[in-house]
Image: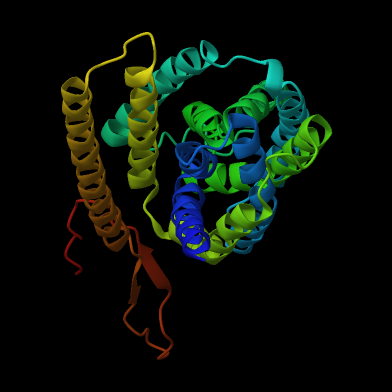
Length: 331
């Protein structure tokens, strides 16, 4: 019973993060299962089994709050499902010891780009609304699905930063679309594991615990992503990508940093992340105040002309006041 409650709490926390930032459910849950001695294939299979329910609930919640672009879901979700099935089927023979650091390095670079872009520049709305091409989404989904199945997580960390970096979708819609399309990935990965492993090593009780927590958190996370300022959300996502992948790299055979070095780097990264989020929030407030001032300054001033000799009201004159300039005195 204690294990079930613990897993439910982990599932709740993981889904809150995943539904708000578009990543980390699989990574968080798989890490716990590996820590208690589950083999990688069984851990990934258990997590993806739970994700069938959590991603369905998350997708419905995001759809309810208007966070989903269904064209993107179809164009990235179907290739993602193919990649996930392939990754799950060949996990037992695939070594990810070399692939994991390489992918983490790529994601770390994307995370730095996103953190800097959203923190210092905000959202470049010149490309917002432009369609994402299938030739971009299909390969992205294929790779993200394969990594997700073989690593126990990775759909969000691969898909979310890549689409955010394109600058063509608002962060909340990126997150909502990635979370919704992950339902297809979870089904395909589960089928792949069923073919490769059968039911060996998959603990349905653990999957149920993760599922319960995820179902509770899904609507809360979908609401949060709609109300968090986009600029601040971008900084949150970028920082999360950096911290997550820096941890992987520091523990890899490439670096194998000592504990004091790792903890020092973590402290520095968390401090930078916090400062970036605070700066983004302050800039968001400043931008909102400026927009409000401009809106007030450009309100049409309606003056009714003096009545004419016949007593009829004169024509209505509308004056547009440019932003930042006082209105001219009326005679």
